[in-house]
Length: 102
Image 1 (cartoon, one colour):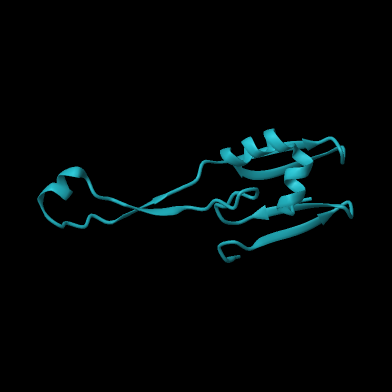
Image 2: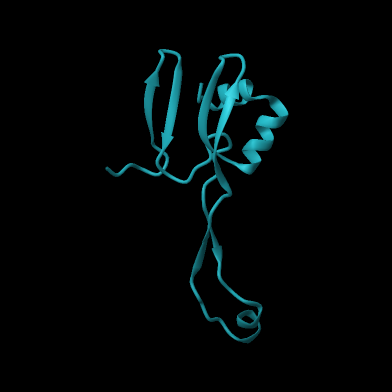
């Protein structure tokens, strides 16, 4: 089954908790995706124009289980390391609610 880049397959459990299963490499908190970068070495720049192709740079994504004390539930998400710092700073419930996960 193929899905678009940012589509999510949502599955409802316990009427109030929604678990998002992300099919693409996207952070559920920050929305970070992969980026296309250049593939030039300094030697190539010094000599002549010689394209060597593009490089796709992936975000640092981690699968984490986060306990939300306000709901007394554990939520599994795919999150970047910057998203983990956001959860640490603002709290799990507020961050996940702002992202639309709970």
